[in-house]
Amino acid sequence: MAEDTQTTDQGPRPIVPFLRLEPKPHLVGKKCTCGAVFVDSRRVACAKCGADGRFSEVALSNHGKVYVFSVVHQSFPGIKTPYISAIVDLPEGATVRANLVDVDPEEAEKNPGKVFGMPVELTTGVVGKDREGHDVVVFSYRPARA
Image: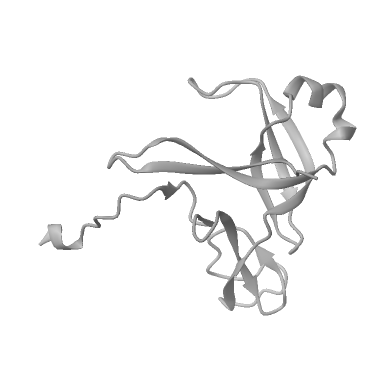
């Protein structure tokens, strides 16, 4: 009977539940009736108004601005350093933590003013395979193309 419940889908798997790959990669948030938007699996109460569970799913913009960043020099074994971890403000009012790619970490440390407020866009990439052989897809942000 367990065989009946297993999926035969061999498509890629997002690493987080708020990343959607179709029709094109984008993040989804939870929007409260008061207008607050969150990027997480919020199910209980709104942090802005305290309302219980009145959330709807909303597609988020693929563009934002770097609010703050940090250059990471030490990480788990197998993770290449240095890399840039950033908090990105989205136009809907939500924020999301993600890695910033296509920016030289050394240059970011020397000229942080060029990174703070930088317009960025969502990008995705495959980082490996899960136990079932599906591609594992992560999201990050890169400088927005003009």
